[in-house]
Length: 142
Picture (cartoon, rainbow, N blue to C red):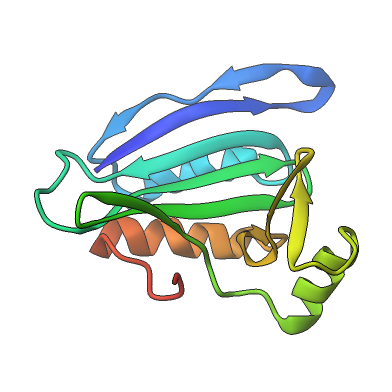
């Protein structure tokens, strides 16, 4: 696994860069991942080397300071797909969709995404990254 550092923004616009860590342990990964909680930033966890079989390849999170965009890259039959989490309650999905006129989409950094992929609970992000690190899968994605 490779924990790929992105960028993050601290108070007053200071930007920090995450390191890339090959085969991180859980504590090391969570240390850097936690730096983007309630901040702007992004990080990913990538299966390396890329396996020859179909399945998940990369888990990605982007934070805007309030919400998080969480998705997983999945390959099947040489085709790329994006899987999204299924963790929001109906009320959370409805509240996010209401911001976009109730069309099943949510706004994140000015773009529209499926409402299920935009979450507010950073614990879901942590849980996804730990499960992906430990198993290479995530049980609550579809």
